[in-house]
Structure formats: C-alpha cells, structure tokens
Length: 61
Image: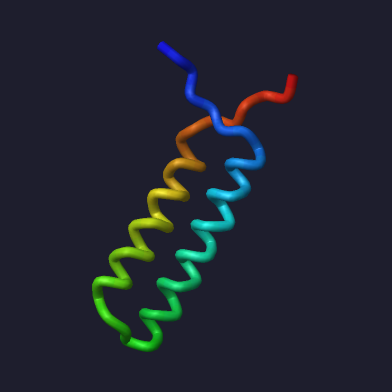
C-alpha cells in the first residue's frame, strides 16, 4: 500500500482554504444567507480540516 502524506506547502494551502471557507460560512450564517452556501462552505471547511487531521505530514529528509 502506498503511504499517503502531505507536504508542508500543500498542508498550508489546505489550511488557508479551510479557514477561508469557515470565515465565509460564518459571514453567510450571520447575514442569514442562502442555505446552499452554508452547506457548501461548511462541507469544504470540514473536509479540509479532516484531511489535515487524518493525513500525516511528510517527514523532512
């Protein structure tokens, strides 16, 4: 089985995108915006954070 790891730059990009999606989720929620946007931003933020939580970082060689 191939070991799946994230490099530091990729993990950083995923983290920034997850933070952005979380911020947009909160903005739409406070403005009582459309529900579909809440689902989109919420799922994207959750998936990004789950990836960061469960996929290990590559060790520096």
